[in-house]
Image 1: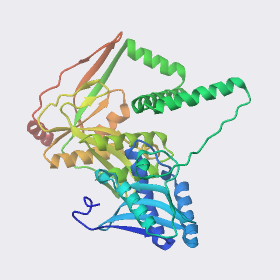
Image 2: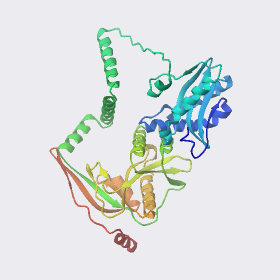
Image 3: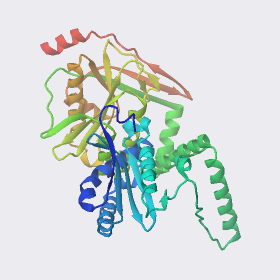
Image 4: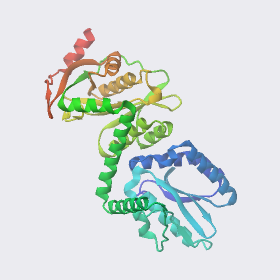
Length: 407
């Protein structure tokens, strides 16, 4: 609490009426979704049905005097929440979340501590119920536990033995966090493969995988940004994205499985790298396209399975561009890339982007947006061996700008 309050005052509030809580629930849901993104998951509040449920629940509990929306306010900004309630002699820690930017100060645990303090001073409250789950932080403050048993009944002996083995295997895996993480990653990979098989068919997937392994050439084209004017879509703007922006995009595209997977990848990148993410947004706040920027030198290009070498000083690479399924075919890819490139040039950087040569629509979109093809590299695979063919030219950006201006 002291750490959070060094620059501005920090206070704890317990809101009890729907008039107080109703206007804040959308902000709570957005932070809840963002917190789940930061931990690699899609939270249940990403769905409008769940947000509507909490809104109606808050309305009913507010009328009954049971609602307790507890918050930590830092200045004018809410940084920790607990959507909870008081009933009989219990104060329920029901649905908490906090601002991931302040994670080092443990704002969620600070809020729980304050709730316990305030409950201890309230004569009508005897229990702070921490709810289901054996999260580690609960053991720090709890002085009593209650076990919840889940019982599975099977008629056939074989099914019973299978259920026992599954249960014990799951307990064994959960006892080793690294093993659990690896198995979850493996299961996600299996899920991805099954989705590809369902979409493309086993024969097509097997043919492509076998062909890539035995004999394949993958050409990657490198484009330098042009210096001409950028034609942006009407009533759209470019902005740098943070975790809350990604959470809002999840709410907008929660039924778009591929876009949600992309946004999870973006959230992880925000926490682990110095790359910058950008989004193109229309006048209504709908996200149309996303793209990322990182230093060109030593950028790992998965299409080549190798790190890149910059052709000149101060180069940056645009990468991991994505258009949600509902927004495709409208030119947002090229518009966004060109807008980011213009911004980078204003910073004194030399922006580049790449595309697989076989991705004809991507190549056309980049050329239409003013990007100039400069060179290509080819990843060659032969019977399990691979290497990169081609050379990176040394380009004078000032000279290229002069040539472009003359043209």
